Image (cartoon, rainbow, N blue to C red; front, side):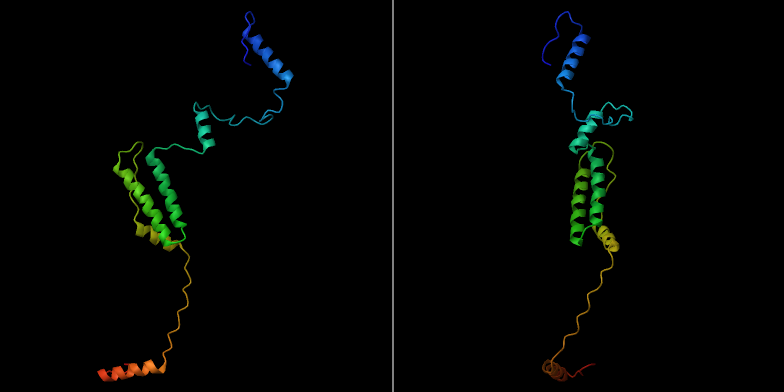
Length: 166
């Protein structure tokens, strides 16, 4: 539809003519979404609907840095509680603590942060408490001493004046 509207023809009749010719050529056949309901037709009108849809399609979001860090801190605590080892819990908490300290040192935009660095030992203690009790490994039997070293021990103890087994 690159042609211009001819002079002397009303705009409405020219557009209707363009649509009719396109229908005759079959350009409206098999369009994507044909017969499907309109998305969000019952939602109230939002002036920024297209921005929100673009962000959702791209998997992006925009939050002020303080709110984004609050969310990241929640996710970090959840990841720490599901961690497989104590070293991993410590690493996760130390990383989020560094981000919190960095943001606390800078002037912030948006709502206040309302976070302080987490106590690593408290988080580790909570992690240990949530873990199921690990069965203790069976105690190794005491080493069997041969008679020779035992005889040597007795001789050394006799020299010092101590009695064996006392």
